[in-house]
Length: 179
Image 1 (cartoon, rainbow, N blue to C red):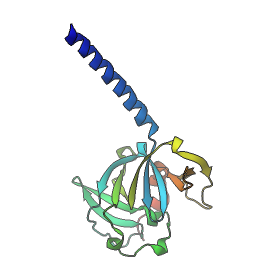
Image 2 (image 1 turned 135 degrees about the vertical axis):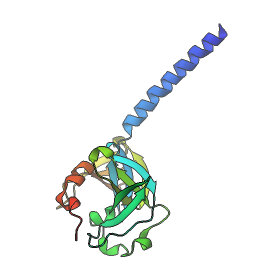
Image 3 (image 1 turned 90 degrees about the vertical axis):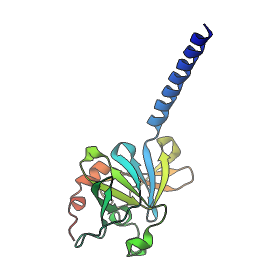
Image 4 (image 1 turned 45 degrees about the vertical axis):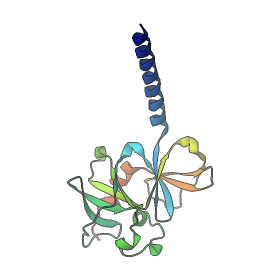
């Protein structure tokens, strides 16, 4: 009888943990990253795997934000330099990729549902964020691209830019990497 009682308690505890885990997973909405001198929020549903920095093969005659091609898990992925793509103080960024890569540099893949073998190069991964962590809506920068969905301000007064990766991959600029 005692074994049945403890088994029932174990099942109840597991059910409570599963319910709590589902609730927590729903609240995390964005992957927070830093690229150049700005902070960005990438929707979790549009983001894929996070890779450590990998050696790149440069591709000649491409736009400055197209960093090259990396082999990740046996597949070739185009590497998009987010800081250069959005024009994050591009003049302040080192011209050589190797000068900017640090131990915190990461490659974030686009979700497979978006249909692109591409990763976004970020300078730092800042964790997960949810809407309750932000106190206000800020104004989008003037002339911002269509994939800048909204600007948010957190409790510390830091500005964050939410990116819509689905809109990014539909941009004619993103699709035309030739210089």
